[in-house]
Length: 255
Image (cartoon, rainbow, N blue to C red):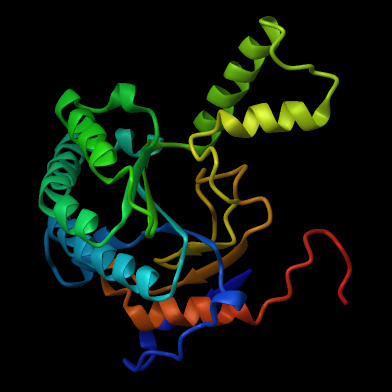
């Protein structure tokens, strides 16, 4: 686990991490939009808009760093409890970003996938999400997963429910641990993707907030006080370089 203050770092970009030392799957909690706006006496909605710019910077940085999978926590299942006007503003921004950015993502060979409980989302947004996934499904560049109306506990529960139904149909032997694990992971929203290697959270909080709970079992946790709209390519490189220096033991002993 790393607690870092990248907000005060210089603007120079750190040397690139060698792919062999870098993470395959990076997950990011993009925290601090509201506080960024408050510090500048701006409306929270403007903080979210500036946060979108940071998302675009990060996607390009991830492409340059040869990251295979990038998962972004855009809207949690708990975010539905926020004031209705803020939720509405976030949904409008999300819809706008989908329409505005999907062509560029596709042109850059990025495959887009959305994970989360779509039953709670507006029908129009669900339609746009499906269109984006279909448009980019054959792309073989960066795999961008965007978590919307997502919660790690929800993900585990829905996968476990499907596992139980498979067992009822005698499609999986519950006494076979390997088969059970395989069936369970195949029903997670991140099916067929590698586990999280590097978990980044901006904004200073040091918790994982119900994000990719199963998938992050052995992730390296990197926390920075940098508020999300201020997160730069250098900040991302700092996290990658920190990761490259880690010795991952996965429960074993140090060599």
